[in-house]
Image (cartoon, rainbow, N blue to C red):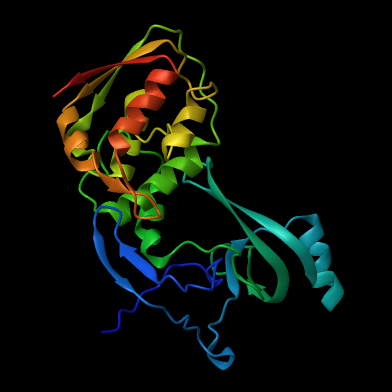
Length: 276
């Protein structure tokens, strides 16, 4: 039997010699073993077009000068950073490109604007399935909690990426120690769900407070609006205990993600009160 899939990484695995075989698991349970795998890539003559189109671009002085010269050397602008803004002009994320201009034309989006095509695309483009989430966040961060709750794990991970990118760009004034926070645990059925619930407990709807246990520990060291010691009341804790009490690490070894999060919180002087 053959199983086909994609891991989303352009490079081959770090350890190509797999004499011991491979273990297949989904993070919760073992799915089987296999002896080897083949790395299948598209032939060079089937490489997709990676150019990037900037629509309605208002060029700055350096870009205008490069376009006026029109030479290949001047049009090679080197590395560039695209700042992705929401409707209100706030930064949501950033993406790197190699800014080599292929061609340009007047844009239909307004006078003085240009549509510019770069020869290379994004260094690390978001997956196509992320586009609806970017569109949703374009109007700004959520104003109500649990808007991610109806999604599956993969889509929750994309939502968490949006939360992380936006949340790490904003410093929040530190709350005084001794505050009480409340975690809605009804939807903490997987790791991204617990991270999202913690973020909203600590920082409100759409709030970021770590995307894994290590990042949670970093957030509790300061700079993310919470000062310890403090108290966290964890409602419906039984859901995370049941769902995350036994997960598998990358080696396929079982551990409790629920207990790990509790340990991190308590080590950073957060009193956790579990309410099943």
